[in-house]
Image (cartoon, rainbow, N blue to C red; front, side, top):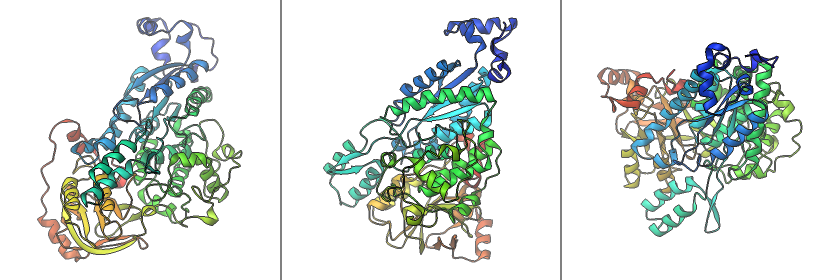
Length: 563
């Protein structure tokens, strides 16, 4: 078959082996069955990974957006192929055994997108996603495949309303804690439940979904200005169509994800996460994406950048506002422009539209409103929203979200629980007292397995009024909706003999954010003796996806990756 395209080597750099030449007649016969004609065979083939699902409100609307991305590709003279992959809802599974599958789903999503695009010879990729693990999974696959790719975010949910106040899923978890302390009636709890999630979209605060959407925009891998648009807003359809145009241009120019996802791009993404008080999960996810992109990034880079990046928003979980308020205040671009003007962004980093991020931000004239978004001179804090702690309890590091708490020093006795559920029951049963250090272990990547989030127990702590007087540490992780003095990602984890697995009931644990220290007050000799006596536990799962994950997964300190 003759080609009319002078850039065929770029446009069909993968799919030519599927659709061109006499020997591909059998393949073309199948492609004709799905609607392609002669001309289509010579166009680039682009996968549209649509993570639509009825499992969660985050994703239930995505097909409408994915169809618009398909139309944008058709209009750009590319052939789109929509396919699906999994999603799970952290908000629904939180506090249950099923939550162990959350981080596992990130790997499954990345692997499944890679598998389809590799096997079917896709020249490019657009991913339409919204929930927490969708986005890092998508980005990992893009970096791994390294074919022209664009990410499209489905947008955040609008806040609910209860007694004249905006509420969201964070309030529901904290309400459970209040109910357990008889500070709220069952009727009040149910009324809040009916109001908290009014429709489609990812959780509304600066939780993990919005954190990652913002980071991806800062990285240059999504349409500029799209990260803060609410899910119900039809601007998302325009963004999706535009993504098709950009994708075709990337094919024409031979621009691939690793051309964009450079060290500078990752630093831009981290800066934005820190400035917006983003989720601790961003540490895990950006490390994992960087690994796939073959970019040298470590957990210490987050701390170094945090020491010099101002905190510029007042967003939940630690603040007052949500992502729709960011949109009303001018969007994520306003924060990016403030960082750029402050000399804190690599303005020459390339983006999917062919411009640098500095060029994309030239037209941003909206100034921080000093309510939702702050200018650097009026920053909420001169340092960023995350800190990395080390010490004899966390030799490989641990993560705390400092933007969600003013409780930066603590010393108290350990109350130790092997698993999240036992700790949750301890909180709701009134076993945790002022000054205690709640230790939740054997919930790391291998030990859980799956490193489940602890929003149920952290919400219960805050709802019970213990957020300013206790400390929680875990080798598991936290929801982006978590606030308060909560330290996660403690590494090495208990399941591999890390120090968190050696703590005894009543040991004194100290935390100091300023000095970045997390320690148990016992001697080195005593710690070594406990290590000698420690025995690994039998795995919680011997078959299935969690067992496979436990065998393959790395330390949280390098992203909890399986590749």
